Amino acid sequence: MSEFVADGWAELFAHNGLRRFADFWEADFAWFEPPNYRRGGWSGASRVVLQTPGGDEQVVFVKRQENHSRKTWRNPFSGEPTFRSEARNLRFLNDRDIAAPQLVYYAEHRSDKGWQVVLATRELTGYLPLDELLENWRRDGWHKHRAARRRLIPEVADLMRRLHGCRQAHNALHAKHIFVHPEKCRACLIDLEKMRPRLTRRQAMLRDLDSSNRHTFHLSRTDRLRFLLHYLQKEGFDASARQLWRELAQMERRKQRKRKA
Picture 1: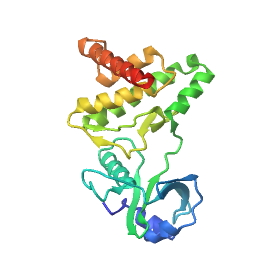
Picture 2: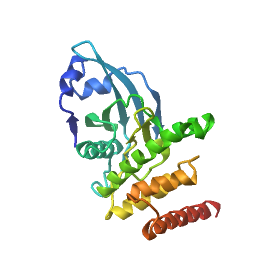
Picture 3: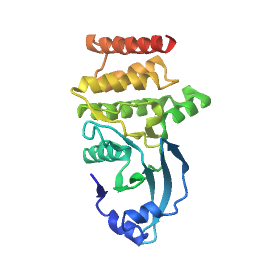
Picture 4: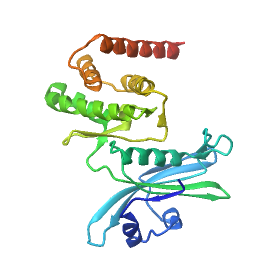
């Protein structure tokens, strides 16, 4: 995928003077966060407010990178831009209505400095990282948010089950990579650069459940059990649910021993 524009967005971009790759690349967008410089390249993101012909606003995040690539089985020698895999994964999820930022623009250009890539997604209005929400609830008092937890946990479980049903593993499923809307109790996945297919649904499930279990803090044992039961779509803990619970606990202990070694 060398270039992509979501349906209906070409006109909006053109209305804001963004008709071709160079317009995006050379635009003087303010950085939303400082660019990341490493290994001779850089990567950064900007929050851009677009004006619609009707006078409204549409907000997008425009990510730009230069000379950031990695080797893949598709490109074992020359490598590919890291944003290319993210764009590919976003389209995969968008096409299947699995909650993730909407990809609205992607383009890449090969220059004498390496790959130059632009990726734009629609802003997730009202969302925040799950780890930030959990920390807010902890400081405010867990008992005050019992009802919200009971609504949100099934939403996150459903999202992960749908992803794994496609035999896809996020591969970095920390709480900070799950964005949630507290009022609407919705969840979506972000930072999809490392998402990869697995041979089986179970492989995808174990990889991500282990990661999310170890990198999601403050949740009680009861909340974790509630999440697992909803993920498995079970009313109570039968033999298979208990086996998975034990398996995840064993995976966590092995990782802890490796860190101490």
